[in-house]
Image (cartoon, rainbow, N blue to C red; front, side, top):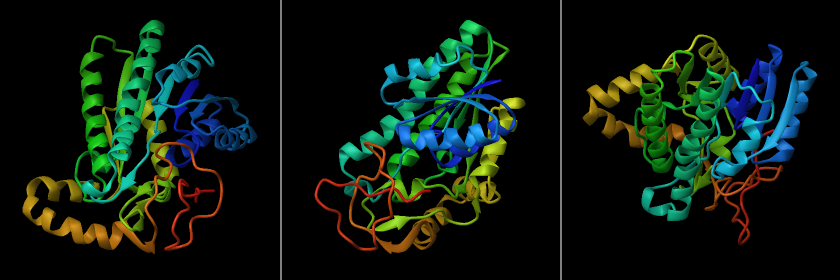
Length: 294
């Protein structure tokens, strides 16, 4: 099996790469950071997988051609690349908001355009998008991410309708709730406090397992998370109650007590390896926050 993973350098993408490596898939790993990709590739090779690393930026469509042609055939393309920004809408700089949309939504469309062209040519393929519970509900302080994930859900639905003529081509969406990944710490932040995944929190391996199952037995939408249905019910059936509660709950569980100065995180470029910024310490002019993931 030939599998492409965009966003393979950390989090759910990394866990998915390792899950497929255990199954003996031939992997193409893509993300912006060559160093991070090399670390994931090394772990996959230790499991016996054949791996090719292709640095790529989903906001630059031309970089995806090399991803698609690394092995020639693509049976499964998993797309999990995403960035995030915390802060009230009016506090998040326009260029940060726009780049989150460009990466998470337009980047998904760029991937779909390349993947579907390959699938049409070869007559089959499964495209799995990493969605989010925040593609079905809304929380404060995450407006750009919420907007993009709602857009991704609409895009996937449209693509499913438009590929009904091809019975061996499938477009799927796997939408987790809170997952223990680096995105909360590497996100741009204008909220004054680091983000954190509110409970209940799932592991990236659990989401990766759902992605692998979905690719093997394609389903339109897969939800991962015990609380997802309850939260979605409240959002739809009890909007007044939801709107009153979601702000305080987000400040209590979705933002940590750890203070941080405004920064762009990894929105514009990958972060260098290093220790997280000490709580409350201002960032040097022109600098971004170091990565906190391993």
